[in-house]
Length: 120
Length: 499
Image 1 (spheres, rainbow over the protein chains, first blue to last red):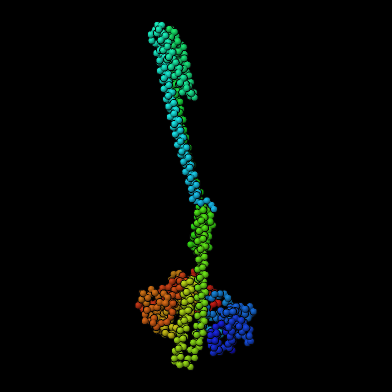
Image 2 (cartoon, each protein chain N blue to C red):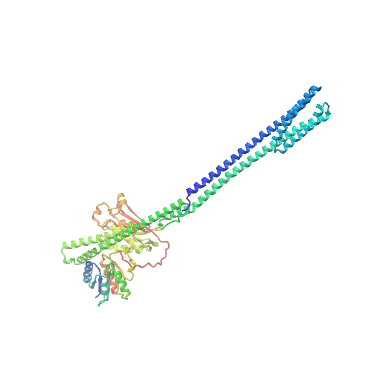
């Protein structure tokens, strides 16, 4: 079963993603900040893919991603963001992510991207 | 502080006027002097000539005194008369000599005549007075010599008078030439002064003009070197102050704009987050509609639709606000038209099939690539197609086509809907404006789609127009084609959110 780590500071978004991904047949772990994301990818069993919110208080998703990559962790990461194309304050830092999905989600697209990245 | 233009001008004018006045006064004064001298000498020579006449008269009196009665008593009377006449002649001659003092020629002539008169007295008058008879030849010769002496004096006076006239004429000429030279010199000095003044202003003025042009061209960092005459230096300082103020204002405006943009993005971010969970849960519930009552299904449908509208509205508002602030950026690259049209058509297929409409896509062969940000142009086309989808008749045909128009590519979206009136066409790209027909009551949408399409197209230096006849409406976007038609272009990869 594909294990997904969902990281988002919004409790309701987190709950929604957890419920729907579970209904879609995924094994879901959650975290609410960057540090939680780092702990989550290091935990056993490892997640097959991380859905990482870009903007979070404390350690942001971007920082967590940079730290992950710096420490040699190559787990696929899908950045989820409420920003749009051209709005991202610092888009360059998205480099290192395997893709981006905007909020609110197009559910079919989200699932498709998860399948593409986690299946590989 | 350098000398000001006004004080330079003042000093220059003062010097110039002093110079011209001095030259004029001296010149005129000298002319008067020359004139006066000439008149004096004229009078002098006139009195000399008069004195010469007097000498002639006294000589005639002397001669006359020799005539008269003979005899002892007559002899005495004659001698007395002669002595009186001779004394008058001598004093007249002395006066003449005094008058002619310093005039060598005239003095010599008087001296000669005096000698001739003295010779006449000794050789003619004395013998006659002594009762003798001088030889007539001697008398004639000496009398003639005296007369000749008088004539010579006249000649000498005339000569001196001519010399004096020549000298005064020469002096007059010299003075006139000197005055003219002085005035010319003054004029020359004025030219030098003013050209120097102009030159001293030219460079700093050019700097100011260049600076003003740069500033007008938008380079707010422009400052000029302040130099030259005091006024221009002051102007330069004022110019720099103005530029600093403008730059400060621009920076402040930029700061405010950036704050507004940050605020806008934060607000949209915060709005999208709850919409995400509402939309997600609504979709989740909708997927379980089998276990729901009709009323619940209806409610879920309404929630889904509402969150969809809300989500689009947020996107549209952000785009428009950023477009207004000039912050909606596009990254153009050579973009093939047909794949772009096909991609947009694919995204819209569901919406068209829901209304039983047919979407026909066509692109002319050998279309050049367009200079476009494909994401943004896709967004604009999406909005046009949504519009056609909403306003077109159910079961109708919507055409999406691309053709070449010179150096541009025209992309058309046409529907078979009710079309628009002239008045409606005028307002169709305005925000929140919707066609006031019955159809608009039924259709959803934010009323911002066409306004955004217009903004996006104009960012590409393209145009967007709307036409409508009795039936159907046609929207046309024209976009500049790329110059090269190179087929092998690897599209830039970018990691970013997709719309």
